[in-house]
Image (tube, rainbow, N blue to C red):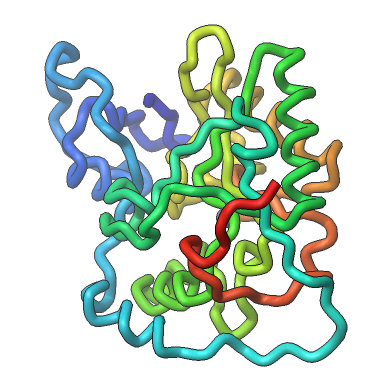
Length: 265
Ligand SMILES: [Zn+2]
């Protein structure tokens, strides 16, 4: 992927750098002296954003699993988590937290699955159908996320990057099964859309209002947002890929692992 850095900073290409150089370049907002490799050596490597955890994940995971989600008061709807691909198999998945291709470079989910509360999931399916009429489909990076994973993200992330991860004291809307991280793919070519930033990139390029990048990158980002908004989703102010469903506050924080959800129809 090529992206244009903020004004005054040289353009860099993550495709032309190894992962570490890409990380450093991104963290430095493009101020990077990495030497570009010849194009034939850099055919489509996996691309993802990475941070160095403040403590090893192996140390943090048992603490997160042993912790208790915040107690919430009020009335909530019963959880009804359904699997997106069961409702519509044309929705593609790239569940990064089930792989090493995520910002912590460690699998955090044991299964690559995407669940949401039923009304939110059905809204995503309507977006998928509307997009199909325009030649695009949705590729989901993450949907329902057990609370312990949110705690682990927070504990692993440096404090100056905490605006990119949810505070476990209040939980993430992902924990409620009402948030989804996604992008577009081209139905004809299968190619994933080139957006202004990488998924989970902790930089201003991730902001849905970022004015840099190419016009085509911004067009696709805004096209995705319009379609999601039309079905009751709101984009997160720091992440073009993150959308909250309007009824998120009706659902309590969940800490159920994927294995325990089973399949619903
Ligand atoms: Zn998200």
